[in-house]
Image (cartoon, rainbow, N blue to C red):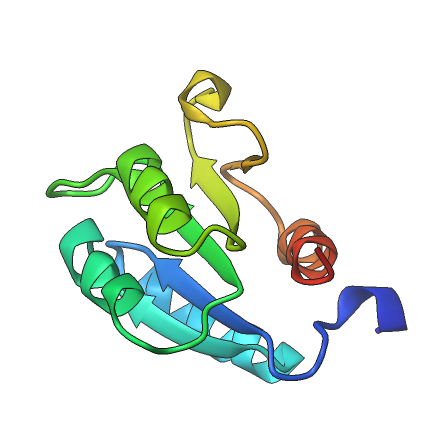
Length: 125
């Protein structure tokens, strides 16, 4: 793994994914890369985390979540609460129109190298 693909030390990522298997796999894999990963199953739980005091550098959320807020609304909330947060939204459908300026999009299915590269770039600002 090159230096460009690992996060800066102490980078915290909030992962929002409703599929338990996908969420647990990503927590394990991203943790193995050196991210501190906070995970939520849906938007409401993620919002509670965002309203807390934990440092969060990157929000990585699925666009479609089973209960409000969805990923686009969650990204808006995250930017309101934490103006310096970087946002990566993923979806299996073309959804770039749901993005706000500065948000990034990763089409599903993605491979882990794609995700690792994009998150490393976002982690560096």
